[in-house]
Image (cartoon, rainbow over all chains, first blue to last red; front, side):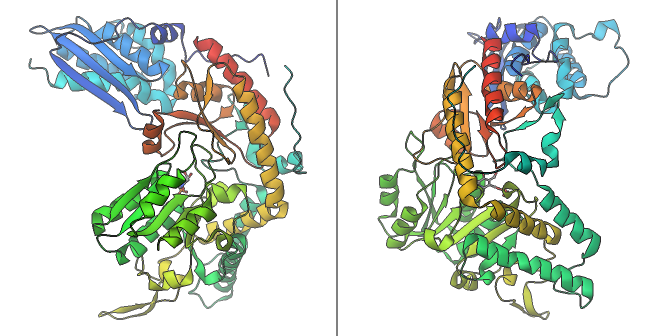
Length: 150
Length: 415
Ligand SMILES: Cc1ncc(COP(=O)(O)O)c(C=O)c1O
């Protein structure tokens, strides 16, 4: 018994653990164009997202996350991946991220729709109870972008 | 690793007990199941499963209606459980036992029916450590009837603050005190007799939410001085879908029905209906017949071991768990109540409760994580969530070792 590893199927990928421990996009923006918040009533976890937009694109993103490792890493990797996208691209990425977690298993996706580093969350497919944790920051993002005037 | 050893003086034959729970030999993620979530819902012994199956195989029909053999057998079996429950709670009369779906429905029944006798200006007192089941119905009553809802504070240790409680009663406006008999988060066993005495002295009645308490020690509603008492079958090794409200007969007689329908009436015309006698007045519609019979089997099964042995076993486990968890780096047990049942909530520095629960699950260990349906309590404790391990009659000391050892490794993984 004593030799069991805590995590046998790499749900807690190295990238997830690193981002949870040392987030690169944590904090607030001085003058965010839009803000959004996601809350999980099941556990009290919370993410707030600040976004700076120029005319069409997301210039920078910061998040304040109180949550588990999955949620914290998801927020940080989301901030990284949507920086530089335009609003429509960010919303589309959000849709593809959700589809990866809860959608029908599809045959190998074409290269241009690859989710890159976000694919570390793929094992959550078999942890239904935790999918919300990874989706929480994206809920905040979508709320923020719904205020965007583009 | 060597641990301080404990002596389980209960005399329970745990190996034999565990054999009666088929699910306990299941594997989860290829590991032996370590089930430490009995406070959410307990596993079911063969005695319960078989009683329910037997009923459906051999003596199932609707009750109180049919004039044929099967219906009579089913009615007898269902009504026999009422006697059993009365004995289980030491209720003065079987007619004071009302079957409900669960504890939540039992409390809602009281909030609705007893609540409709209250008038604005009167108050209900609950505590800061209530399950939502003993909180939301009273908020609904407050909003419906214009009564006041008062919240009795707890101490930092997780005990009811008796002095503050006394003050809430002092203006004589309190009609009912509704308080948990054992907290599902902190494990606190509340001083029920003292609460009842104080309530009565202030002219109030008292309801105990016994959902957790009935599992761990003998319950005697008369000795407790209770006016209402509720519990839920599935935490007592019985099935889901069956719960109990006990109330003093005079109260039940004064209360209007909760739901209308079949079985709860005496006569019905299009102009007017009259109500059946208690308890049937409160049991509208076809009840959970098979589940009630399952509850009867659960009570018989539990009583076979006796609460002296069960309480001794769970006390020993709980003290052992508190000792073992204290050795896990970064672990903080939430609350240190004076008297505690087999429920321990904890947090770990740098590891979120959800991550704890998921990683424990990867190792076959089932615990609960979250706010445990007690959000206001979490806020009071300055927390958003905890992990919770809870014990039952089948829990082994070795399982607590597995829990503690795995927690050590989870923590190492995170820091
Ligand atoms: C203290 C307490 N009260 C009430 C309940 C509600 O029980 P049920 O969901 O069976 O109605 C629970 C169980 O979760 C509980 O622990």
